[in-house]
Length: 111
Image 1 (cartoon, rainbow, N blue to C red):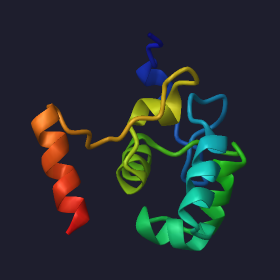
Image 2: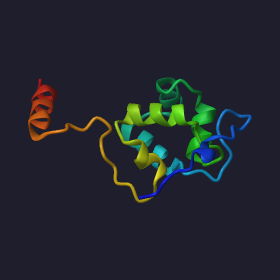
Image 3: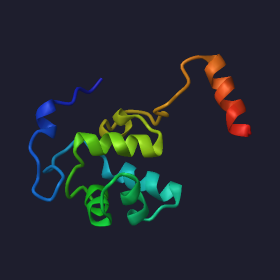
C-alpha cells in the first residue's frame, strides 16, 4: 500500500492547485471526464472550479487540493485512492457494503 505524505498536499500553488510532483493522476481525470462525455467546463461546474483549472489538473500542470480531489471522486463515484495511487484499482466510492445492499442498489437503479 502506498502512503501519501500530508506534506505533498501542504504547499499551495498560486494558481489554486499544488506544485508537481503530485500523487494526483491527471490522465485518470481526463479519462473519467471523457467517459462521462463532459467538457472541461461541464466538469468544472460540477466540482466548483473553472475549465482552465480542470485543464491544468488533466495536464499535470498543477494538482488539485485535497478538497477538490474529494469533489472529483464524488462526481465520478470513484475512490480517492484511484485518483492518487497508480496501482489502485478503479472502485466505486459508494460501493454497497454487503450483497443485500448491492441487490437493493441494483433494484433501485432499475426503477
